[in-house]
Length: 213
Figure 1 (cartoon, rainbow, N blue to C red):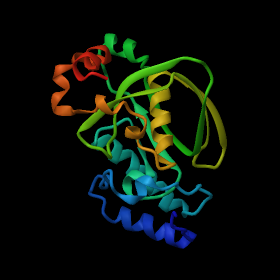
Figure 2: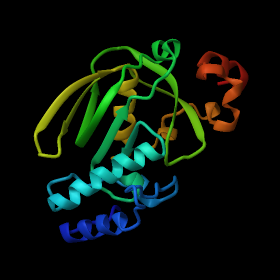
Figure 3: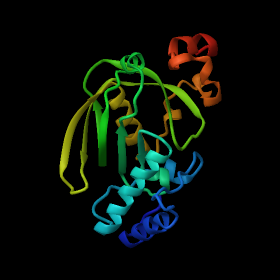
Figure 4: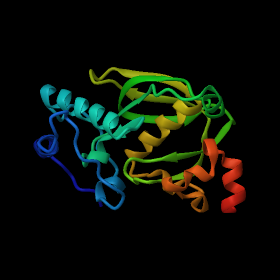
């Protein structure tokens, strides 16, 4: 059973996490095995005072950059709220971008998100997680989705995502229901990042032959 929190308890928890931030507002990322990663996160309904919310979002953004990663959910820093930040502006070779259907994703904050597939297309690719540091695994996901979420002002948004952007949105939204990518991965595909050189450009076909999945 997931713990229940009062608004005061949530705010105190967030303040305790923010108190661990360094001078760049970077906070520790919890790793697989921490109970918060297996909890259903709480719907955000304004539990935090605005200055605290603003600081939390900035800390999540800076922690994502520092990792570095393309998304970070609040449970990954020990906070069971349905909040995540996303951004993917890292330069990559055109050939890899084409293979991943990767388009740049400007910084985005999502509150209380949900997603649904809007096509029959699937994408099969490696992905990793900042809370399962050092490993990646192949996950099959819908290639085209529609996502509903709220922004920090509480305004409801609906937006479609495809390719790599859709994978990021699904990965971070899954975190908010206690799901980690390894729950959906081909377990025989799991690979230490120290072995990635064996599979140039994260070629799934090559990895399948070598790892027999």
